[in-house]
Structures are given as C-alpha cells and as structure tokens.
Image 1: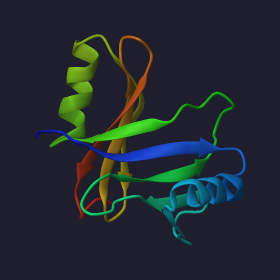
Image 2: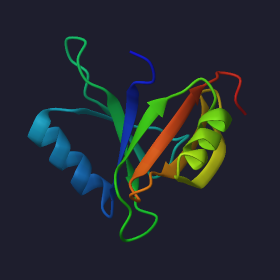
Image 3: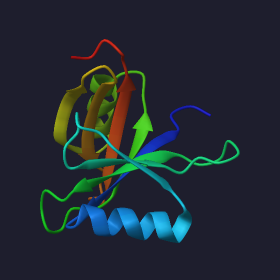
Image 4: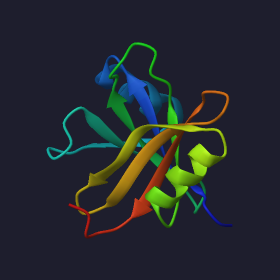
Length: 122
C-alpha cells in the first residue's frame, strides 16, 4: 500500500500522566530521549501490527492528535494538499538524522502530517 500512516502524536498537558495512562491501558512501551525534551516515543507494534508514535507537550490548548503519512517528498505532497483545497500550517521542517515533516489541514480542518524519510536531514 502506498503512503501508509506511520506515526501518530498525542498532545498532553501532563506528559507523565498520559504516559502512565496509555502504558497502563494498553501496555504500550514508552521511551524518553534527552535529544527530544517534552516528547515521549510510544511503541505499540506487536506481532507486526500497529504503528508507533509519540506523546508531546501541548503547544496550544485545543491541539488535536495528528497522524503522519509516509510520502516521497514533503514539498510535493504539501503542494498537492493545497491544490486539493487543504492548507499547510507547519511547513517542511527537518528532524535531524530522520527526515522532514510538515503538517496540513484537510478541507474540513482536520490535521494531517506528512513525513519524508531522509537520514541526512539536518
């Protein structure tokens, strides 16, 4: 299947509370990284099923969860998103050593993340 959902992000006012909630509810693994303050990596994959994601400190009170879709080019898909009636709200941004992401809104205002794998991103 082309362009699968590969990552999710859940915003939290209290990272520790939400980390404990999802770990206790579903048994999800949690990892913090000194390189990513305010962000917890979440491991949900078992028996080859599922996607992993993160829990992040909320940046605004009404911040919704976001699903990220793998794309060959964040720039190309951001352009396509706007051509189809969407709007880019976070432009192409590097994640050093991992790739690039952008966040858009679909025509109904729902967030959609785009992620381009590139280990050379800086």
